[in-house]
Amino acid sequence: MPAHRSDVEYLLERILRFRREEGDHDRFRLEIDGKLIARAKTPYSHSTISDGLLAEWTREIGIPPRFLKDLLARRRTRNDYLDALRRGRLLP
Image (tube, rainbow, N blue to C red; front, side, top):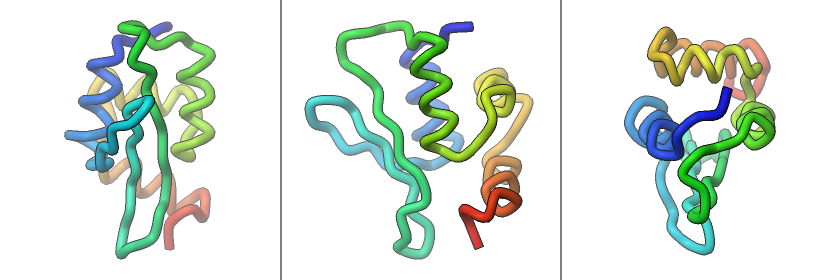
């Protein structure tokens, strides 16, 4: 199920608290205690993000696709995301 770029950017910036870096794409970085934990980018040229790109993001930000869909639907929170990263050993 594709997602609107604005919804994904809102999720990354406002809910998961990634930091935006603008360039050829909008890049987002999650740093905790000065350590890069995850990163993702959104293309300027698309208002809708395809399932393929969403699947790629799930690998980049360390969660399964279903978890991303739950985050986009607001059924999961930042704390749920951080817990998932700890279970995947991406976060101490």
